[in-house]
Image 1 (cartoon, rainbow, N blue to C red):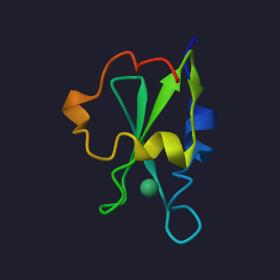
Image 2: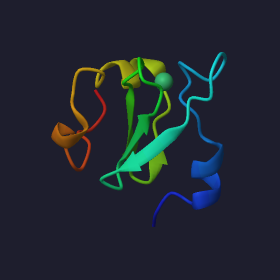
Image 3: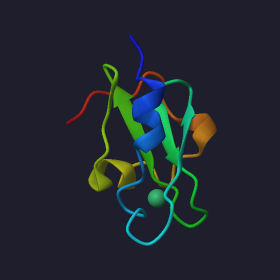
Image 4: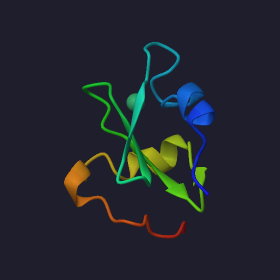
Length: 76
Ligand SMILES: [Zn+2]
């Protein structure tokens, strides 16, 4: 199972989408990274479900894309 391309197409960064595009790029097949320059939020895909919560994205702002854990750690 994978996240469907149709779903990925409509997903946006919840922190950015009200004022900007908030486009996301999938990396490592398990993360969605906001493409807005000053955002830096990254959203994990856990068990094929993108976790599109601002609080979750906030946790990974300081983590470089190359250092994101694969697979993402469990919630909690
Ligand atoms: Zn964003």
